[in-house]
Image 1: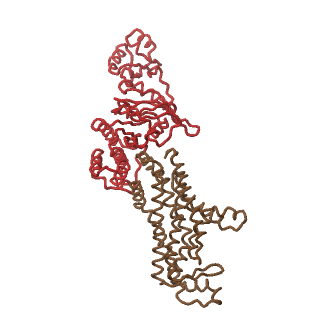
Image 2: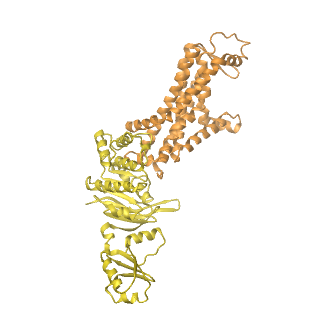
Image 3: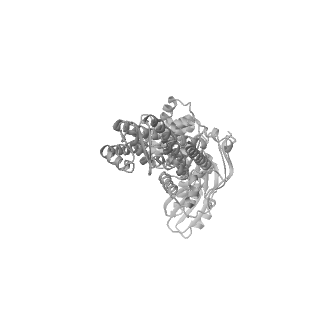
Length: 279
Length: 310
């Protein structure tokens, strides 16, 4: 299994397209940081206009922690596409390339191949989120400095002391890995059904967009199904920036995401194990 | 020699299309077994079933006496295969592809073995090039290297000469013969060309629309006495009468206006020609076609061959 996983990782990281995702994350992060460098003060004044009359906020508000939070809010909705680029390609891409039949004539069980594909997609997802953390947090702190963090909400704000910020980011990034792993497992399932990777990648994004819209619609019909949609729970990372942290709600979201991930994975193994390879 | 592959009543359908029906055949150790059929006859589907890529609807497959479903992993380690095209990771070098697939077959394979198989298939010196820069022939060779690297007893090669130029075809044929003769491999090779199979195979099967048509040793199936000699002649009203009174009567297959067909050993063609000329018959053209070839061609076009030898 270790050997198979090493080979899968080797294939992923020898492909130029893998690095496109890292490039996109870097580019968007730098663009937001550049925008905040030039116009950040105006943005913060506008965001705090409602509370400035009641509170006298002093210090470095426009600091690296706030910028990172803004970057995460903007980027995490798009990361599923970058995850799908690899996970959606894992089986369908091999089918399209014609290498799947060669791979399956080797003495390895199909469930092991699926597991290796899943684990390699998971490792890629972890590295992508770690890279996001590095470029967002490290460079934002470098450019904007430290300070207490303000979490701006629609009708309030939460002040988080500087000493309390880093562990929250650590947990938030870990939660983001979990959410994106759910996306990876769904994308892998779609990949098992297809013989080229475009379908699974587009389908993944389509499902995420549709379910995210459903998760945000305040209509009675959707209110019933919302708790069961994984997209409802994908934004659980934001809870780590509340005070107090709603651990029970975050834990529940984590359980839902884990159940979805395991469910998608089992379905993939079940289907792929019986699939006729005609590609 | 015992059998290395035995199939019993294999059948496979895709929706309403019957790709393979009730197919049984046996391949013995040491054979080069030709698997002949026109495109879409069910060759690739059968080969995929032998490798566990496609699951049969019914029937069973035995590899070395063991049922395939009971020992898939262990049995696949005895097989090396190229199915349809030898597709590989174009962005990796030939060496990387070989090393990767070797590790999947057997993690204990050393670099020396990789060099050895590259030598066997004639790719030494080009292994560091990216596969996307390889010609079709080089890809086929790398595919065979990958199939060979874990020292399997059995090679399954699906149309290995497809897309090759004449020189590439000749080299591939020589390589297949060498793998059998010098390395003791049993080889199952498919083709839609009888000529290709005839050149290398010791035994063969012909399938048509998923069903077995004929199976046997190549030298008995291609018995020279079963050759059709087609002779174009100038029209002669009494020719049939002349033949009936001669030794050639028993060999005459069909007689049409301006055309005669005999089933006989082609070595006797000069004697027949002399006799015809001696009878004052103007011979304009002589062609020979083995009855098996004629029959196989009849499957692919609608030409009706009378007196089938099968």
